[in-house]
Amino acid sequence: MKVLAAIPARNEKKAISSVVLMAKEHVDTVLVVDDGSTDKTALLAKLAGAEVVSHKVNLGKGSAILTALKWASRRDYDVIIFLDGDGQHDPCVIPDLLEPILYDDVDITIGSRWYHDEGLSKMPFQRVLGNWILSTTTSLSLSKVIKDSQSGYRAFHMRTLPSFIHAMESGFAVESEMITLADKAGFRWKEVGMSATYQNLDTSTESSWYHGIKVLGRALHLLRLNKPVRFFGSMSIMFFLLAIGVSIWGRMYYPDEKLLPLGALYVVSSFTIIASFFMFSGIMMAGLNRISDRIFNVIGEMMKRIR
Image 1 (cartoon, one colour):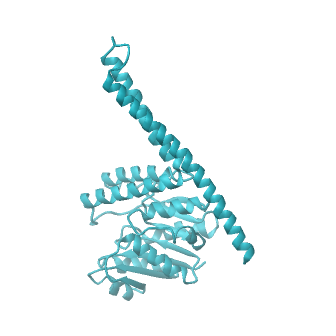
Image 2 (cartoon, rainbow, N blue to C red):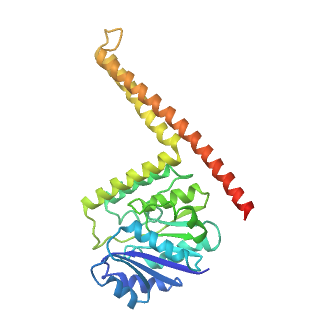
Image 3 (cartoon, helix red, strand yellow):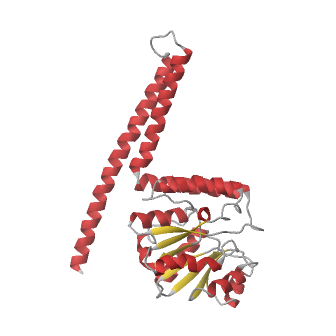
């Protein structure tokens, strides 16, 4: 198989040359997408032997990944593998990610720090906590649990690209979005244990929290669209539990009253109505999703027959 390693990079002059040189040992071509760097990232990548595509301004990692996907889709590659250009991902792990795809066991592999003995021990605590929250949320949209949904170290067989390349947004949640759309299309994926380094890398707390909130919002949006019963069902259960909690509180603090106090009764009634609304919304959206999927399947079959 012909393999492309794609590296989104911005101002990575310290590490980009070594990452490119090490990646070249395991793949046919290395592509660096220079996302508006103001240093010598693009020049050093070229000198190290990489193909380089440059954005004139910084568009974000999601846009850089989309650029790489479109570049690869116009060329004769079988597998595309993504890794970071800051040295966080060890290029020597590339064969481990490629092997399950080369043997046709899966279509996608994801480098997971949760399946490596040293993967979690090297992660800063705020990253571990944020990763767990985002991965748990993303898992609700998938057919099985994912431990490391935010890992940027992953490989895709090129046959998977049509399932997400035209539907992806260029925002923060590109990792969650790619695997969610590919999983919905029925492609097989698995996580492969890997370690990562964070020494001398930027771990700004403000940036991490801002990034996390954006990704969580997008993950919830994907969950609402792809698994409406899970999303609205969770909301419904939460409000039903709140209604029960307020009822118990009212009985505990007003044991002599036959009915709940008027204020508590209003709250319980409101929570119950909201919970019922969420339950109804989930059922309706799930039904609409099934109908739309059937319509698109019928149209797809008709187009195949016409061709």
